[in-house]
Image 1 (cartoon, rainbow, N blue to C red):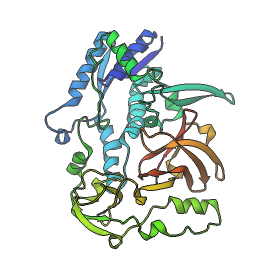
Image 2 (tube, helix red, strand yellow; image 1 turned 180 degrees about the horizontal axis):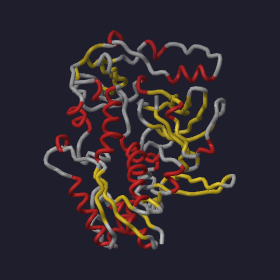
Image 3 (cartoon, rainbow, N blue to C red; image 1 turned 180 degrees about the vertical axis):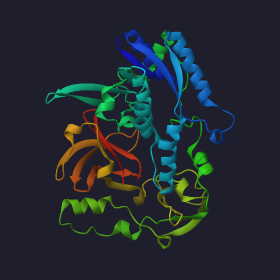
Length: 395
């Protein structure tokens, strides 16, 4: 009998995952990951992880499977939290959920599972896995979940062949309503439980408040850049090569305080991200202001009026070599090669047509349509026919 360790989070998805595996005849062990217990940054007196681990334990009892809490908060702090602060201080926007899967669930957690003699690790992600023998060796594929509204393949865009080989995603073939139905039929306490919002670790903590407790506030200017800013309207130079053109298009606009007018102040550029609209507290404009750039060195936030502001849009982004990750290592591009794909730069964004161009220093992703708020530090993931082939950190 194959042994599977399920990451039981205390939510409905992982509860049904464990239930289905048990029905399929696996020997199932439930583990709850405790990733966070710095109470100084939890809002109010809520202690979500206690409540969640309790729900996970009740589900394990109901299913008749062994259950244990594993404390991963040290690794979590090192690999995720410290990294996040370093990124925010550089003015980049990390994606903790993608990292949590790569560094915690499918690395530290997987190691614990393998020490327990597990053949597989299973999670409640809405995605699917397939395998195909190519040139005599098994190649694992990560496919989008059946439920379009819930597809979570993006969060797993940094997994490797080794990690995928040992992963199971039992609810990937189901929709969320079907998962809730199964939980109800199996009389699981989590059947009606709301989906957890917020980061994969801080429970109910909101990111700005979390950051504010760790990064020092410092007052700076909010500057509005006009829609007819000179760089938006100037002629494109002619390029000798496609790579020169891509490099030009991937370069973000540079702003100086003199390019616009000061309309307010903020408490620290590192608290803001591109595309953000809330929290600026500047009135008197016809349309809402959006953050189009943050300068953490000069501590200035640049904004533009309206969702269509030119400063928000670009159609080319760059990923440096060390940040490129292929799940399908067999499809890795070499310099000079291109690939037609569909790509997204954030979770829940519809897939957009794009072309990958591999060059000596990295990889350009050229979108057919301009993308709003391309954010350094976030992940771009590329797909073909529902399969996630690879991803990278936007430079």
